[in-house]
Image (cartoon, rainbow, N blue to C red; front, top):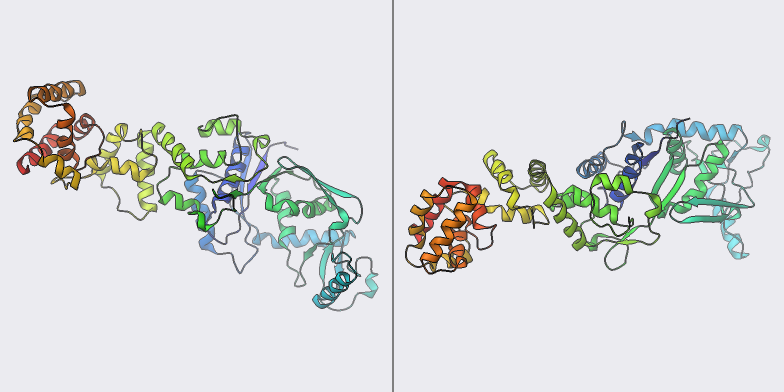
Length: 468
C-alpha cells in the first residue's frame, strides 16, 4: 500500500469560491504538493436544489486564477450516489445498520416527552434491535448503529485530541426513506474511495468527524488524518461576511491583486513559519505543515494583502506580469490593451513594478507608455506647463536631438541644460512630466524618455512647447 499523501478540496457549488474556501484549497494544495502527493477536487453537488453549473464554473475559475491545479478529473459527488447507497446496504447486511420505520411525528413526540422528563432529546429508535419479522410494510430510513458507551477521540492535528462521549451520538441516518444517501455518508465513501489520507477543512466540520468516524470504523476503513482549521474573521473579529468587502476569490482578481500575492497572504492567514511574512510558492510548499496552523481564527487585513502583493509584483518576471495584467483587464471587464500597448507596457515594466501594490496602481504609473499623442493633460500637469518660462522646452528639443539616447547622457544633457538656464532640476522635471505623460506624478523623467524612445519623447515635448 502506497503511503503517498492525498488531499482534497470539496466545495459545494452554491456560489462563488469563498475566500475561506480558497484558503482551505490552498492549504490542501500546499500540503500535497510539498510532499509529492496528490491534490484532488470533488464537487459536493448532492444538494440538487442549490447546486448550479454556474457555481461549479465559478469555483473552477477561482482555483484556476489562484494557480491551484488539481490531479485527475473533477469528481461529482452526486454521480457516486449508487456507490454510497451500496455501502449503506453492506452495513445493513452486516448488522451494523438497521431499518428504522419511525415517522417524523413519532420522532417529534419522543423529543417532546424527553424534554418534559428532562432527559436527552437524542432520538433512540425502537427499531434498532427489532426482529426483522416485525418490520411493517412502509417507508424506512437506514440508520447506523452508533456505539452507546465509551468515547470517540478525534485526533486532530490542529485542535489536538477532541473527546466526545458516545452517548452524545445518535444513530445517524445513512439512507433517506427514498433510498438516497445523505451527505455525511457520501463524504466518507468518497474520501475512502479517492484514497484521501489527510482531511484538511474548516473547523465548522469538527463535530462531523466523530459521526463520520462511525462509518470508517463500521467498514473497517483506515481513518484519515484530521486537521480542522479555524475560520477567517474580518478586521472586527467577527466571521468574515459581505460587510467586510469582497468575499469571492475572483473578486480579488478583478480588483487587480496578483495571484502570487494572494497565495502568499492566504497561506499566512492562520499558518506561520517563524516570522516569515513574504515567501515564494516554492518556499511555501517546502515549509507548509499542519503544526504551523494556529487554533485561533485569523483576521483578514487588506493592508497586509496589499503590502505582500506589492512585493510579489516587484519580483515578478516582466512577461508573466504583462500576461497577468491582460487577464486582470479581461476579468474586470476593462478594455484590452492593443498589441503595441502591451509591448510598451512590458518594456516599461522595470520602472513601474517597484512600488505598485495592485494592477490598477501599476497601470496608472504606466499611463505615459499606454497613451498616445496628442497627450491629454490633467489639471496639475497644465499648471506645470503654464509656469514654464518662454520656450524652455523649445530650447531643450535641439539638445535632445543631438543626445545619444542612454540614461547617462540624458541625465547629463538635462542637468547641464537646467544649470545653464539657472533652474533647479525639479523645475525642469515638472514640465517634462506634463509633456511626456500629461500627469504630475509619474516614473522618473529619464525612465519615461528611455521607454518612449527618442522620436516619441521629442514629439511630445515639441507638442507641449507649441502649446505653452
